[in-house]
Image (cartoon, rainbow, N blue to C red; front, side):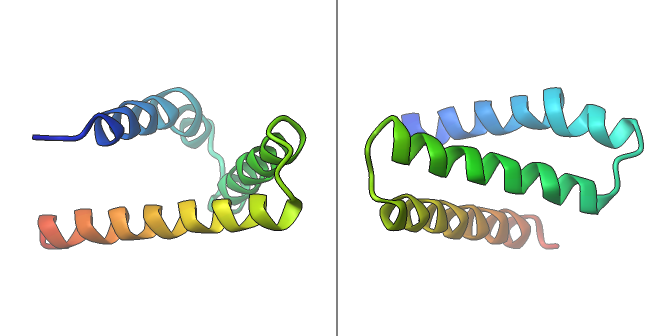
Length: 84
C-alpha cells in the first residue's frame, strides 16, 4: 500500500509534468530552458522557507538539498524497477 505522502507526491509530480513541463516541451523548450525552470522552482522554495517559515538560509538550502536527494533516489528506484 502506498503512503499518503507518496500518493501526494505522485499526484503533484504528474500534475506538474502535465501542466507545466509538458506544454513547455511541446512548445520546443530546450533542456537548458527546463533547467532554468527547475532552478526557479528551487529558488522559490528556498525563499518561501526563509521568508514565510523564517528558516535560516542555510536550513532552507539544506532542506532543498535533501529534497533533491530524495528525488534522485525516487528516480533511480523507478529506473531500476523498470529495468532501464
